[in-house]
Length: 341
Image (cartoon, rainbow, N blue to C red; front, side, top):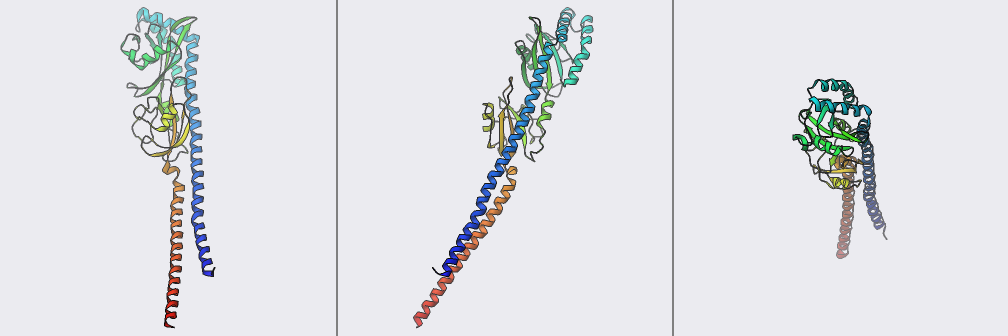
């Protein structure tokens, strides 16, 4: 083999090596970046899941402890008798309610409740720490039977119950309810209901440190509607925005996972999702970041590798072309000399 052919072979082999090396390196880099991004989302998901579950379990514990408190049982008995005797405006009722009012206000302030209700076994809303439009009405026969307060009361007769978030026009925010039966020995006195604000949950869901410009965390109920607000919307999205994606469907079916999907905006995202382990509600938790942002660094490398590979390939083919052209010229010149001779 001639020296020229050897040099040509070495040159082509070296060029192929230069082209292949960045491509292989890029492939491993992209895999590493993808793995690191998902690991971060999974870590955030785990911490957030723990926070949300703790929050609701604490409220579950609150209503369980309060409903068993002897003071609450005593208040139920005394308020019920006074309410059925003279109604909300009776002197005896006012005297008894004023006796317990400071304690109930303490619960509102210390626990951050919106309101607290005593509803007797006949369905009468005989007391509320803050007077509502349904205070004094009956939840078994009245207008509010089908409202959230009526539903949580009915379910609370059998044990601790939860009623999902609904919009409260008077308060100007979303609230939810927990309820539990109150007993005097074996006798059912009624149902204790606490009303909690969405702002508690919203404060947890809006801590987005470490999630960049497009990272977000949100909750979806089993009706496929958000139970939190989207960072991409100026208007509230809780119970307004429907989210039906591969991730939400799997999470609501009890599957925790991670994959690249199109989110509710139809934008490709890295999604880490999981069901919440709550006894009383089926919600999905999702932590996501736009694929473009997550892979921004590796995409920059990809562009540079593509440019570099194209340059190396172009130079290689140009070199081969020029060598072959020179070879042809030499052959033609030699042929002409032979002919003249």
